[in-house]
Each structure stands twice: as C-alpha cells, then as structure tokens.
Image 1 (cartoon, rainbow, N blue to C red):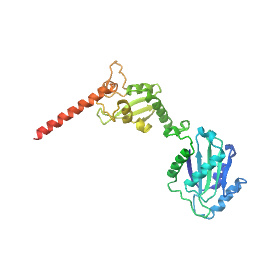
Image 2 (image 1 turned 90 degrees about the vertical axis):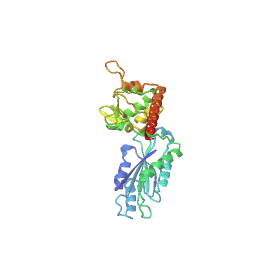
Image 3 (image 1 turned 30 degrees about the vertical axis):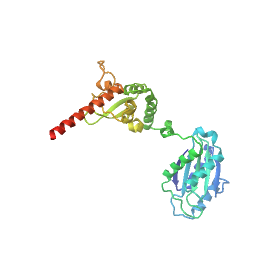
Image 4 (image 1 turned 90 degrees about the horizontal axis):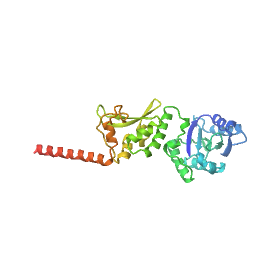
Length: 300
C-alpha cells in the first residue's frame, strides 16, 4: 500500500476526475457530503469551505494504491475501512470526505477527496504529511497482512522514461547476475549477455580502483547510483569476504583477455582465490610492521 498526496484549490476539479466515467468509478464511502450526484458532492465541499475562505488549498486529494497481489483480499468495505484508519492516523478527522474506487488499473486503488476545512472551520495541517503518510502506509500494510514490496520492486519499470528505464534494466540484470558470479570476471560475463558494459573508476592518475560503472544504451551509472548494494565496495565484499580491497594493477576496463591473448594483471588478481588475497594482505601488513620498526630504531 502506498499513498500519493496532492494539495489542491478546486473541489470541482478533483471530484470531476474522481467520478470520470472512463475510470469506472464507484463511491465506497463518504462523510458529511450529499452523494446524490457530482454537483451535490461539490456543493457540499464548497459550503464548508466558506467557513474559512482565506485558505488557498483546502483540498486533500489522496490516492491509496494496493498491490495487485492483494486484489482478492480487498472488497470495497475493507478498502474503505483501511482508508478511514489511514485518515485517523494522519490526524484527518472531524471533516468531510468522499472515497471513490477506480477500476481502470490492474491494481486496486481508491481516491479520497477530503476537506481540509474541518467541521469547525479549522484548517487540517499538512505538516510533514508525506513523511507521516509513508510511515502510516507501512503500518497499515503490515497490520492488514497486505503485500509489501521492498525498494525497487515497487517501481513500475514499463512506465519509466530514460535514463531511469536503463538504470532499472541494469539493476535487474545485476540482481540476476550476482548469485551466478563468484568474481568480477564472472560478473562481466553475465552482464555482457545483457549488453551491459562494466568498467572501473580510478583514484586520480593512480591504479587504485575507487568505483565501478555500468553502461548500457548510451547511459552510464556508478554502482551506488544503480543501488547502494551494487557499489564497488559492496560487490567486492561479496566476492572477497573483505570490506574493501584496493588493487594496484594495470587498468583494464574490460578485464578480459586482451587481443594478444595475455591475461591482464588486474584480471589475475580479481580471479585469485581468497587465500591468495589473504596472503597478499598479510604480506602487506608484515611490510608495514617492518617499516615502523625501522622508523623507531632511527628515532633512538
């Protein structure tokens, strides 16, 4: 369950949209308004609005969208019950509202038109309403045993425009490729099948790897921009068991064998077993200790 909140100035515009015949609209609940027809609903809201006419945005238009997986659970009565509890938790009480269900989408969803001028002529605050709404939706989703999609699963990728569409294609490809990959070379091979190029970012003019970049369809994204779990350090941690390992090797953005048939030093390190990487770390640690001892001896 997610909510979309819009503040408005026109009750007639919102009610016209909500009762659009093309959307197969159906009134499922109301309070304090006459529902005989569209004009009656609008007049009811406008009459109460006159109690505080200085307010420029007296309209709350809120849509509550549910997962298509919950379609069989959500009767009109249950959706109205959830909507009432949502309003109560959002401190939207003692006021007029109408709740209308639309059937123009695959997923169940309802629209709420609410008068922010309450029955006493006072304004219902919208302070931090987006934050409060997100928290409330999570609570009600869990309480009502509804499907809760995490993170990017909630995104309708077919509706995205570029470059977001490509970014989510890369996200999906990485999500499928990571379980099949035990090192960076494996990951490159898996992504190549999806026409995704993988390259490294380096620190200044050094050979120290600082990040990873994924490219497709002419767009490029750092790993952390695709998703925090796909940053260079996070992926490297999966492959090596270390928080972060800096490779000091020749740059090879493709980290595949060159046309000469020789394997790049970077690829050799990447494909090294964890034991070898551990040995490299131990060796580096020993060298550091020896340097510190020499410095102490010189200081005496």
